[in-house]
Image (cartoon, rainbow, N blue to C red; front, top):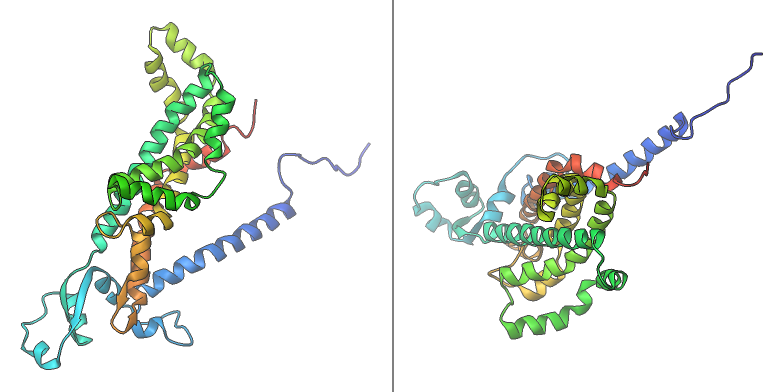
Length: 317
């Protein structure tokens, strides 16, 4: 008996489905990447080309934006500039061609360092405490576990900015405004609930038999946790770290309200990069480009764990 085989796999997608999915993903990637690519291109344009109409996609490359980002300039008379010694750097030469001189270094390196300290510091603390709490909720009989988990989740019911005024008054009273410790503590408190819920799901998927075997071999509970649970939960920890870092890295409202100098991060600093005669768009684009580099590097470094962590537990055996 012969006939056309109409059997198909319920797991593997059809050719048409793959093609449609590829087009949708490609379109989404294009829409997402084009703004970032445009910011990158603007960072290497001159001030005139950055505001030209119609917009210039390709123009003469210049590092004027990066020079303006890392330096403070002052406009001087041509006679004063002519009496100055020869330029000592390429940025100094560009500045004199525009009738300005470099008066000193900007605050950009310090603001970028603040973002790194506060972002990665709060992420480490949130993931560290979230891992311990998630393990306790997953493995031990905690009295009122469901109520406690609901309470932890309830802290995410409202946007964090809704409690900005009480937090500002509390921080001002305690002298914690514009401090690294205060911002790390705040971002940690916001992220720890997300870390607990995400990591509990990952740890629930790890068989208890691994720990039981380690305990039988003579390991303590802490040793079993470190040697058996943590390696298995590495994918979940990586995924949780990326989500926590994204919030702490991009957070704007609390940073504007609670910092102004010592602990100010890049998000509230970038909009105030003002150039000669108005907004210096190449410098703003340069600052934005440098700002996204650390989190891109961090995400790429964890990309293998991130992909597994997002899909971990999706299929049960």
